[in-house]
Image (cartoon, rainbow, N blue to C red; front, side, top):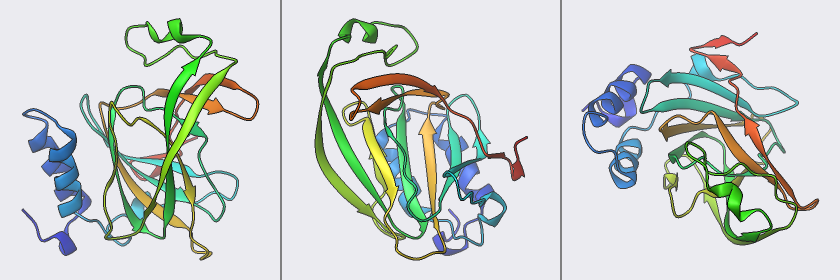
Length: 204
């Protein structure tokens, strides 16, 4: 395995391709992501900031894995959201973010979870959700994970620096949509996910 401090994006992707030949587990990929930390220099081709919203920048995708950077300008955050049943791993490349973990308790449309290929159709107008914990994520710190037991969270830029934050995300399988929650107005809906850039080129 390449030295962690000299790992390239190509090295990282090749390692994932090797992993996908067997059983993909949360802990196996977590250990791999932890051992293969990529630097801002290695990822510079995939770092784009936007003052209006965080950006999702595709690095690699196949049937089993999706790899991207997410770039966060100061104050940017996601909505509370699910991961459509996928497993996910996040490591920090630059700056610091907070991950707020939530647990679904109940809603008035539980039958909408009975669907193949999606975690839920969404559409509830009464939602009971418990905020469990917050994980502060920093470069070199623990890899943040989502799995089938803990799949709902919100991420926000917690870094006071103006340079912006960059996180590296791996998902298996890739995620094309998720459930987004608006707890203040008691609603949830399916959100299609798009890339800001693909393979280093800004999307049109």
